Length: 80
Image 1 (spheres, helix red, strand yellow):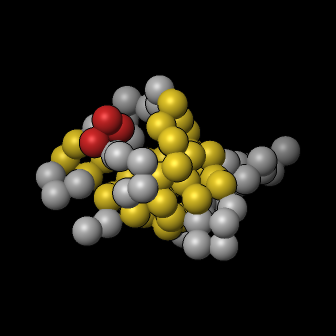
Image 2 (cartoon, one colour; image 1 turned 90 degrees about the vertical axis):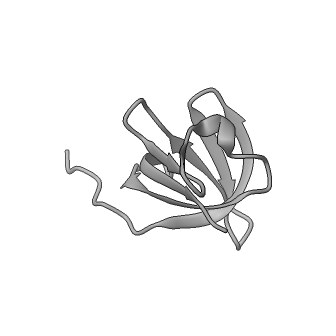
Image 3 (cartoon, one colour; image 1 turned 120 degrees about the vertical axis):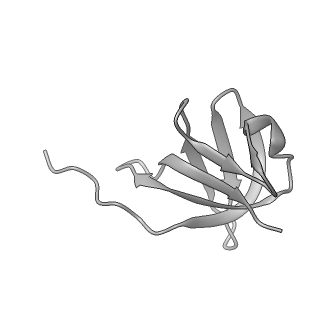
């Protein structure tokens, strides 16, 4: 079974944060599921955590794309 290739950053608006999962709405209206773990970096104006991502925040997500269209995040940056 081939592994998923690394994808470019995913940019969108935080729709919902559910525990360690973030749902992002992209510019074309698609909702992307973002999986996080203890090693996922979250940055706002300074390092933060998932609770620092309010609904409606513009974010850029870097990570591994899954076959199901979700992304396993290594970093989430809150755009200014």
